Amino acid sequence: MKATLTFLSLFAAAVFIQIIGEAQAQDEPQVQITEKQLKAAANNSLWRLKHSMEKDGFYSARVALNVWRSNAVDAGVFDLAEYDGYKKQIYEKSIRSNLQCYERSIQNNNMTDARICLFTWKAHAQELGVFDPDRYEKMEKKLKEASVVK
Image 1 (cartoon, rainbow, N blue to C red):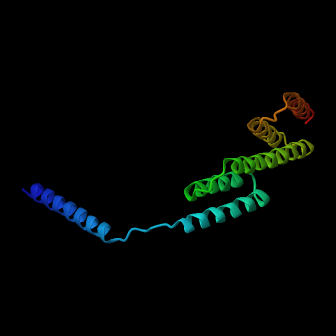
Image 2: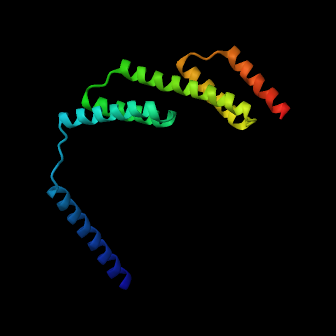
Image 3: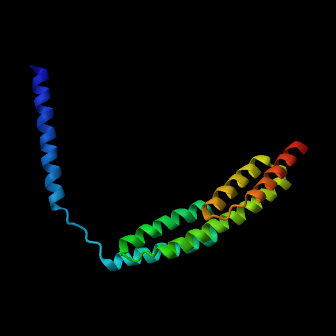
């Protein structure tokens, strides 16, 4: 009997909570986002993208690129050519940075970092279609030789 009463009281509480939740949802006003707000968000995220491309590393810039793309699509101002241009700039910066990282790591006898930089350079160069297999082989050989000397 106690179990039945407990069950019925829990069931009644659940129904009551559901009714209250539905009533509150109906009372809340629906927020309308205007086209002007969407364009402002797209412009803001474009500024953040450009700033990130200049100041931040690869992953922050990629996130900023994706946020801008999403906001630009929502605002109806997305341009694929512009997106591709920003993406190319981000990858080119990463390629340069990873080449520098590779050389600096070799000089400092940090072979683990050199391998990571080489791998990242290769992946990003392949993404842009500028990968040079001969250069990669030379860099890989240099890394192996530096590892043996260590």
